[in-house]
Amino acid sequence: MRFEAVLFDCDGVLVDSEPITNGVLRDMLEESGWTLSSAECMRLFIGKAVKDQAALIEEKTGRPLTEEWLHEFRGRRNEGLVEGLLPIRGALEAVAQIHALYEGRIACASGADRFKVELQLEKCGLMTYFKDRIFSGHEMPRSKPAPDVYLAAAAALGVDPTRCAVLEDTVPGVTAGVAAGATVFGYSPAEAGHDAPDALRAAGASLIFIDMANLPDML
View 1 (spheres, rainbow, N blue to C red):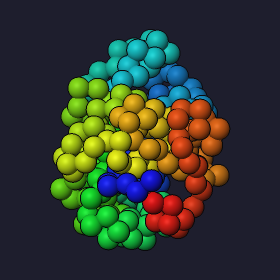
View 2 (cartoon, rainbow, N blue to C red; view 1 turned 90 degrees about the vertical axis):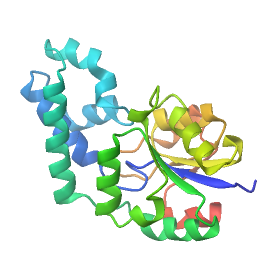
View 3 (tube, one colour; view 1 turned 135 degrees about the vertical axis):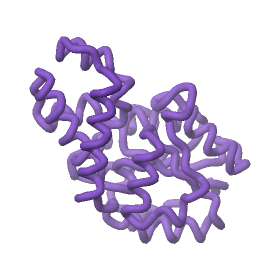
C-alpha cells in the first residue's frame, strides 16, 4: 500500500525519553508512599498520560493527585530530559528520508503535553521536520488509546486516516492508530521502554520492526 502521510508518535519512537520520564515518576511515587521497580513503573504507565492514571495513583498512595504534584513531576521530568535526552538510534536519519519521500506530509502525534513534545524535538534536532505539525493528546477531547490525536493530525495534513501510516511502540498508541483507521507499524527493539512485539501485534500493529534504519524502505 502506498501511503499519503506518515504520523509519528514521539516518546519511544523519535526520542529515548521513557527511561528518564519513568525514572522521575517512580521516584516521586515512592516519595508519596508507593514503591515500584523501574520495570513495574514502565509496565503500568508507558504510553499513558500520568494525569489519566489519577485514580490508580490515588488508590496506591492514599493521597489526592494534585495539580501541585503534577507541576512538580513535569518540572523534574523536564530537567531530566534537558540533561540526558537522546534521539532513538537512527531516528534522525529515518525522519529526514521520510520527510523528503513524502514531501513534508509527516506529523508528530503524541499523548504527551505540547511543552514536553516541543522540548524533546528541539533537544534532539527533529523540530525542523515537525515544527508546524505537532499534535498533543492533552489538547484533544481524549488522549491515547482514543484516536483523537491521530485523527487531528490526518485532518490537518488533508489526508484520509486510512491512507496514513502510524509509527508506535506501545499498546495504547497502537490502539489509537488502529482506531483512527491507519496502518500501524510497531517499533519494538530489545531495549526497555517499548512494548513487546506480541503485545503490539495483538493491539493491531500490521508490521513490527526493530531498527529505524529499515523504516524508510518499509514505507
